[in-house]
Length: 143
Image (cartoon, rainbow, N blue to C red):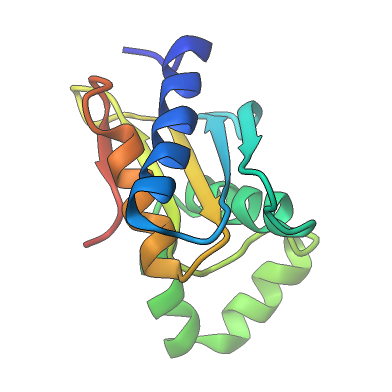
């Protein structure tokens, strides 16, 4: 299965709906394909002006490193020098904080990633997982 615009749109809408249901602060969600290209980006009413860049960085970093951003968060704490170099190499695009979830097909291949920003990292990630549920793709959040 590949990541289609229709599926990406469902993920984004489901993520924003989950945020409203869970009482989250206004969220921004970015869905990237396996090449790191934006398929869909949506922001909830009132979402902050940096939220797109943060959500993009969570998803883009997960794709670039092949690990959910929750795992990157732990690795950044253990090896800050590497992540300082990674920040420089990626021109600041990698955001190693939970809320970047890999999307995998039925065979375990990475087909994209979802990044969410607007509330706590755990809430962002929970909303992404809710948005991905039922799409036929598997979410890898590193939990």
